[in-house]
Amino acid sequence: MLCKDSSYGFYPENTAMMIFSQKNSGRRNTHGARKIARLVLAPLLMLGTTMAHAGFVHNLQVTGNFSGTGQIELATTAGNTTAGVDAFSFTVSASAGGLPVPTTFGLADIDSLVWSAADSVLQLILQTNLISVTGGQVALVLKEDNNTLVDDKCGALGTNSGSTYCGNIPPDIILVGNSTLTTEAVQSVPVPATVWLLALGLFGMGLRRRRRH
Image (tube, rainbow, N blue to C red):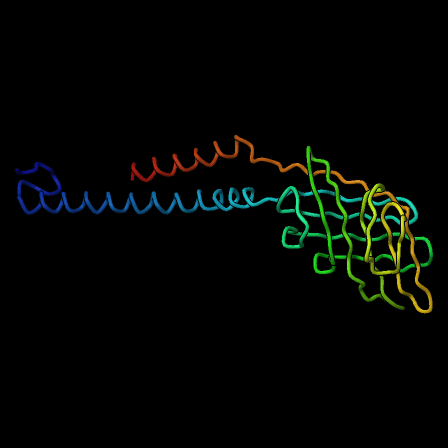
């Protein structure tokens, strides 16, 4: 079949050239569409993956004979090993008894813990190892008033209620307890639907522009 075109003329070889050019143009458009898809969808997929792996995050606050704030991120609603803790940080900002402040405890400092979370309410007993500070060592116990903890790091706490900040500051062992722990669940913020719609709109506009060219 011959093709009539002012730029190519009535020649079979020119017809073949046009068909070849159209095929190459289609390949370029397909390649461009794939490139746009990667550019637009890759960040969204990364965001979705990050949200899918988000744990149970709780803000921590202690008030009383010592005070401080922090946050813990748990991988499950209940557990008793550090393997189930994605992140932890707590800073003691003030304390009676002359214990050093500010002092920050991290995930690597946890010695033992047990927790359960139901209806966004966290029940937590957490004890750290002794960590080195100027003049000695200190440890932290975070727990509810109605819980007791044994095998603590700073001497027998007995029936001491609440959270405790303790220190081995030679020649003394100092216990500052009877402080209140409160927790607050941090809700994950979903990606608004408008963001997804905007991304899909940009993707569609990119495809349309490629097809025109």
